[in-house]
Figure 1 (cartoon, rainbow, N blue to C red):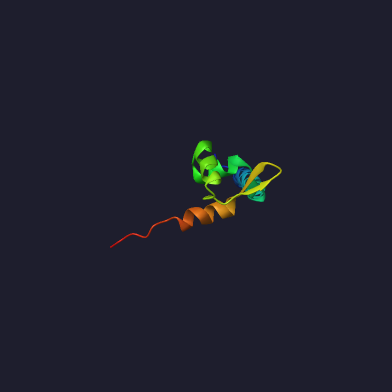
Figure 2: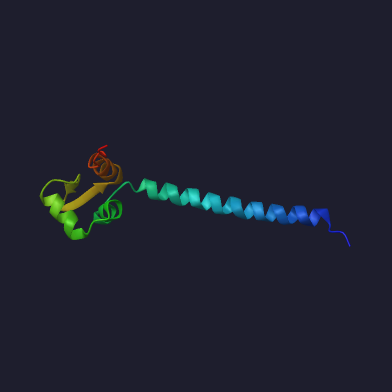
Length: 93
């Protein structure tokens, strides 16, 4: 018995629709995350991988980029990424 070509095409279209929905959701999640470029201590911990204690120490020593308003600390993902990149050492040959 031969397979109905329309069923094969329909099955493939269903798979393609599912993949498109997944990609659309992934892109919207990425946009939401990138929109939150500035935030509190949790952003500094995520971007640097340092402990909250280390972040507070670096803030008090004014060694990590941050802003303070109303007694709250704010960090920018982009500023933290630049700070990390600036700290990279070149490899000696």
